[in-house]
Image (cartoon, rainbow, N blue to C red):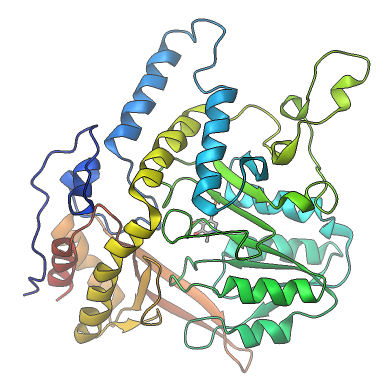
Length: 406
Ligand SMILES: Cc1ncc(COP(=O)(O)O)c(C=O)c1O
């Protein structure tokens, strides 16, 4: 029987935010309803975010009365500013996009990769959709794709060093791996890329809101995420960071619509683009409801502080790293990894999932089926579970999971 946990979830969630992280679960209605250790898949919203969304829905249900947009330019700027603060960027380096994948496609298109030669370097702990993008460009005559393999479940800088050369156009990595939470030494890889004339794109969907990020300090050129995971918002709304010096000069805007127009006063004036990274915004209407969620959630995260969230979650991850191997689960995440994601190969995955469904009525973790290529070139598959606790979880939640799997 695992009983490391001390606190339960007796309190009711309210739109009032808690002040101490030990009480943060009170801010999340989901903490009342069941076990959720799956924030890397879809992070629950705070009650305050749900309240903001309800206000928006109320406004929409009234026929959008009046000319003012509930989620207009001032709220959009605030959202950019809150996100910029979270990742150490400036607001004019942040574009509003629909998804991580859209952001990465804007980067690939703006760099002209579809007609470039050379290579793109990715790694096998990165996002599968990203690999697909570069494979498609390669198939169409674009740069060849180099995939760096993991060593003991992390990507060694030395292996990135061997893969990146003077023909490399872009290095694309997931700062925190969605497979096992491994964290790149992104500054070291960015410096290698820059020394050889390449740019670095970081997929930060599993990092933003989960671990502290400073894109300037890390020398990241481009980064993107959506808001449904550690940013505690919804699908359909995300951010693209474009380092200021690269806007236009290196990353060309490739899509145009009314969002990109600076002045609408005829005589070709509409051909002048809005300043800053906003020219890379989604070119049609924004996803306003999810924008409202992002705005409310970013206020919460900035107030609580990402370093505090990370500090709160790390003992929960450590509890899993310590206890699950005693039940026969092999950790796929290097010990000491400072992200909130930890994955395990299950001794009998089907049995484990059956148990979880029996105890909780759902699977409170993510089931993984991850494909890799061995050093001999043959493929292999690892099946397991990915566990991702967040600020609304307590060590008692980890006990509940461990007891169900025991
Ligand atoms: C690392 C990573 N990148 C990208 C995505 C997909 O994001 P989007 O739907 O915003 O393109 C995910 C989704 O799980 C992810 O984990």
